[in-house]
Image (cartoon, rainbow, N blue to C red; front, side, top):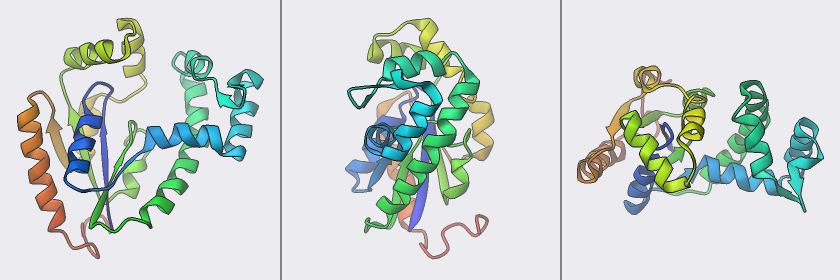
Length: 203
């Protein structure tokens, strides 16, 4: 089965693009959503997080997201440590999920697909882009946060010019109709690939 990594900076609209693929009948694995679930259900992972951040990391058995976010978004080293324990758990969960799917290809949406080298486990990658100011405004409207907090979160991700050379497909997400047309085009191309040898340069 072909694995297609889908990523984009915060506010780029990667979740919107993921929904477009889902509408086309393609199974989509949202890594960030599954990571949050695992951090609340995987006992080994929970213990690792408590060992890293202390007992305040959980309240009544549920992840104290505000507490964790307050630490990692202002401390790159702590964020790296968190990612180092969460991402392997998500990777194992994704592999188990993938084996249950019946489609020709699946989408794995991940915010830092390139930063954590997750793209190396994908046959193809799709990068969703948008101008920085548009991304900031989208997040401000969506999350009811501050501009400073949005920029702080952006600073924990690579700039698009670092990601573009690693991406197989670039989807500028400004005009929704153009984005839908490009997604349809990518879908047709991916659907025509040979699952046994989808990307000779990848092998």
